[in-house]
Each structure stands twice: as C-alpha cells, then as structure tokens.
Image 1 (tube, rainbow, N blue to C red):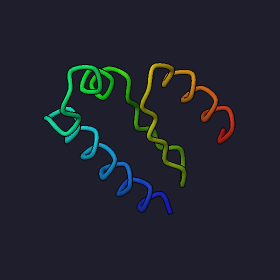
Image 2: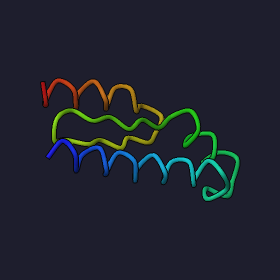
Image 3: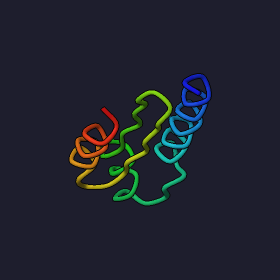
Image 4: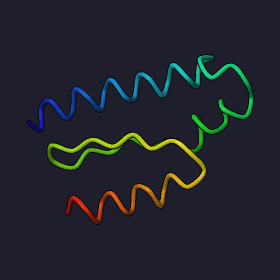
Length: 66
C-alpha cells in the first residue's frame, strides 16, 4: 500500500543518514551516500538508488512506474 511505501521510504532515509553519519567509514563512500543517493516513492513502489549514476537510475525507474 502507499502507507507501507512511506514506511519503507522512512527506513531507507534512515539508512542513508546512518551511512552519512559514519556508517560508510571512508571519505569516498561517505561522499557517495551524501551526494549520490536518492529515495523515491511512486505509489506502492520505493526506490533506493546509490551510486555515481543515481539520477539516471531514478529517471528509468520513473519511466517504468508512471
């Protein structure tokens, strides 16, 4: 459901923040989690994209779920 998707989004956002706050350990991965991560919700679908091309991944995801 959309309510469950929002719950998952909150869990993913907490994970991202945990990695930013020291869970990634090294500067490179911390930078990626800080600047190259996206959490998106579309209806019942939730996406966590982390990586150098995360905006392209989000674009593909959006095209699939719209």
